[in-house]
Image (cartoon, rainbow, N blue to C red; front, side, top):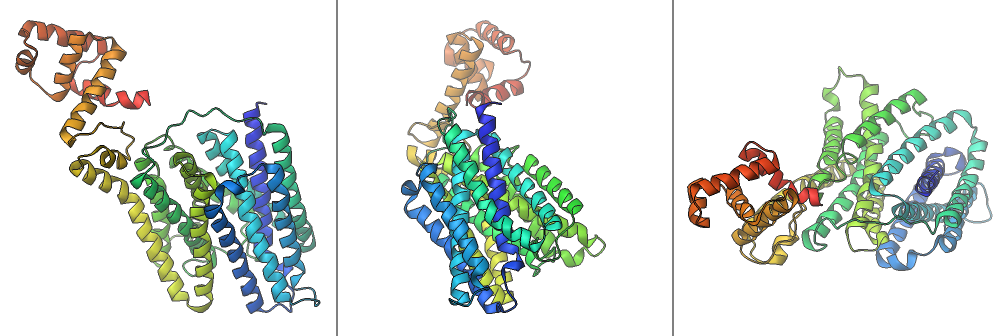
Length: 496
């Protein structure tokens, strides 16, 4: 087995283990005791989000300091996960200290440890996998985690699940330690180019995407599991978990959606890369908001679709975060922090308003997330078109070249576009072995000049121009100007 395959499997195993751990500690009721009040459990829930927000803020403020070797960071992550699990599990079952304080402290450590170790795994994944391979690992981790959680929930007792909640962080740390020892010197050689200038609109677009995905992760989870917009369940461990067959069907839907959207579009220009993914989220909100109109449709089917979209949103969140880390000049942890701060703060606000003002929570999340979706769908096309029509300097033109166009020299738009066209024709002439004069004829032909205008511009006879045209068509193996334009406008993409 190649080192790349081993590294991918190591990352996959670590992601699955930590995912199962956070599902058990986050949704398992056996950690609470009959004496635990709903208020104390609510405080512990808030504390988990507070820990997540604190860690995400550290990503934003100290990204380079946190990006340390695994042998230094893994022990600290393990202490957070095991320590948090211990405090949370014993908090409501002891009387020496204030149970509410102990449980809240453990919950906060769980939030810190979860964000930290997951982000470190994704950072490791970026170093050992190519872009497409990383996408496959993301999807496989989410699917494997979902299936294994269902299996453990049906097979293990409450006491066994508590034991597993302690063993899983240790197993995750061991996998990362083995990966660090065996594969830390293995790194793929990257030949990736940024999507465009790393300033202005490209950076703003990625930030908007990260924020939208962070809020969307909470919104999609709310609409599928909380029950305000739809009652697809109340968590895997709440006694109403779906059967394994249903989970398999939902995972199949997730795989199909991932394959048809961001996996199929990962090589497309930035402006087109996530449009189909955003449409999936829009479809989920339309489905959620029109549940009352879907009376003839089986409720189980609607619930399964909503849960599948929630799982899809979780994968999309990290797909966008990894893409931002690869494409921008920022440290990876800073790109992660943008989305994680949005996700954690939205989750905290959602939990608070859910307890005190249900309608406000429903309306706020729906409106904010839907507006961000519209912005992310419309933003690239609108800003690209407006600024390409009105800008006259190099920086402004390149700043909004979200379609992946080659950088243009300074000049008015007409001159810039003319230069771009001539560059494309030069590439075609070089690739197909055209002579210098045939290259000049090619430029005029692509611009739409008639044969008579070519004769005047090049000061050639009509017969000579006709001969050059015949040679161009023969060398390019085409029979119409339409085919010629397709070759010319694909020339830059072929070189990229």
